[in-house]
Amino acid sequence: MIARLSSDLLLQPHAIQSSQTESEVIGVFNPAAASVNNDLFMLARVAERPLEKRLGSTPLPRWTTNQETTVDWVCNDDLHLIDARVVALKKSGDRRLTSISHFQLFRKSKLDDAAWEFVAALLPEGSAEEYGIEDPRITKIDDTYWITYVAVSRSGVATALMSSTDFVTFHRHGIIFASENKDVVLFPQRIAGAYVALHRPNPNSQFSSPQIWIARSPDLIHWGGHEVVLGGRCAWEGDRVGSGTPPILIDDGWLTLYHGSASSTTAGTVGRYVAGAVLLDRDDPSRVLARSSEPIMQPTIDYETSGFVPNVIFPTAMLDFGDDLHVFYGAADTCAAVTRFSKRSVLDSLDTKRLGDLKP
Ligand code: MAN
Image 1 (cartoon, rainbow, N blue to C red):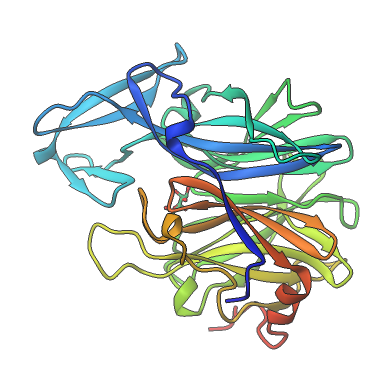
Image 2 (image 1 turned 90 degrees about the vertical axis):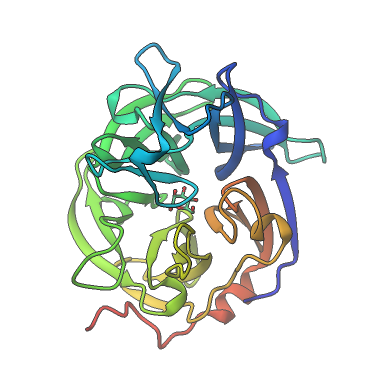
């Protein structure tokens, strides 16, 4: 771990308005962030669950085409609890989420210490977003803010794209990486003439450690040129890895944070999520120049160690303030928080001998 210069809680569920009268907000977390002139914008995932309780049954929410949630009540005997987030239906084996997420946009001036103010809610749309939208990441390319996000439905977990030039109007561009694929982050400029993304094609390949891949596109919609970039071979990233923060270009190359999780040793719980850093070659970002051998950030503060999913640090944005980096992240799938690191300390922590770890 490296020293944090500061850590601040930004948003907590009790202060967030639910999108539905009959739901309660249980999390506001995994926030995308962007610096726009004198303002900071944060687009956070808001998770809600139905307020109504019925003895012996579990409410499983989903969006309808009428832009509201409906609830499927399933008898507890017909379910397996996977963890706090997910259940499996015994009959079909299909999985469902116990909460449903949408996005809320917040704004704050950089010039004063005022609180984050609510701007707008963005709700799921269409059947590919039936079980909600999750984990947005923002990358500015030329004059447009591109937002990759996870779309969850009965067809699985896919990544969709939306864009905005003003944070007032948002355009949806549909699915860009089909199920199972999430944790997609875009580079802020074309490299060798192509748009570039890091993505995570499947949670656990049966042939390898979990992996982060790279892809290229002529238009941000059609993706190809896929290559593996890194695998998670250490215990702290041995169960899952996924890109976290859209890469930033610094003197040494592309710097990006990713999350890694360890397998859980207790049934019904989620393994611990921590953050690692990786430096990629400026001209060929499929080349790892250095990366963390140990996590740079682990859950230690109470709002990171306890919450809806305890012991989760999920980095989703990194803003470059010269000597300092501000890392925005979800804490315990409950709150949005920010930590400040010195850029030097992150770079000094990277292991130049640890590359992609792709060999068997
Ligand atoms: C998955 C997703 C994330 C969540 C982490 C930790 O990767 O559901 O949104 O933050 O797990 O629970």
